[in-house]
Image 1 (cartoon, rainbow, N blue to C red):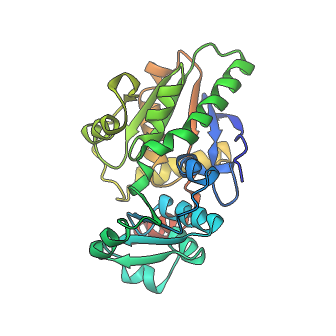
Image 2 (spheres, rainbow, N blue to C red):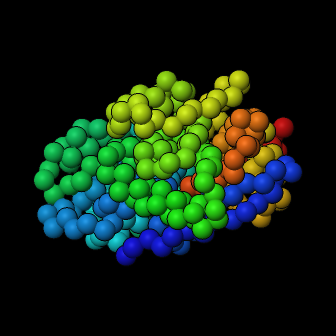
Image 3 (cartoon, rainbow, N blue to C red):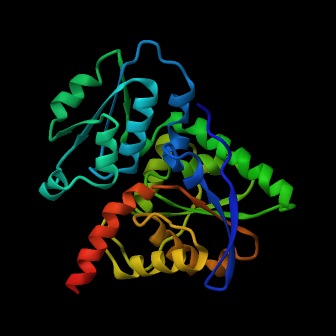
Length: 289
């Protein structure tokens, strides 16, 4: 299986024109930035491997994508979390439900077992969120697609924007693109992102980090996040991720004066299965208010 090139849509939002790279449409099951990050494992053969191990949150996009990868490769997928809420156990939904359906074996608070498994020669270990050098392979292809599209459009220069978790996608995009890549920290702060960048590449490849004055905590629900997500869907017809994209779009709009001198390309990184759980959380919160 090889990933086809994703389309680019022209949209208008808040009376401004943007282009959106639709990596949410890469493949029905294997899409978004995680498909790019795990592409190396998809296209290469690993004859001695029969297990993949990773860790993170119980509604992680990476968790679901790894469950798809493992199913395609015929591997067992072991995933480790610190905690699974009783509500999620009793009412499986979102990425958690979809990953279980793909055969994921999940453990709570079992770092001892995880450490034991990753020592084995028949096992591939993937860091949380896919923050690893191997992610370069798929992101490099994404960069090539963007260069080809820009040339077809006659764009000699442009600005790219995408929100970051570990910042891996933004970093490798900047490495392979002749254009400026801007990002915002979603999981941690600017210092967290810089640390992640340095673990993978020299500073010359680091994208520019933009930040909002207000501090937002990852995974916490904010009415303004839901509002901009709803407005984006209504005005553009595109559903974005509810965890990363609201802060991404708020940051992008906040810095429009800096970026709008060139065409702006926003990278849609998928994650839509996770919206099922996020929408439920927002609905409960908004009802309470």
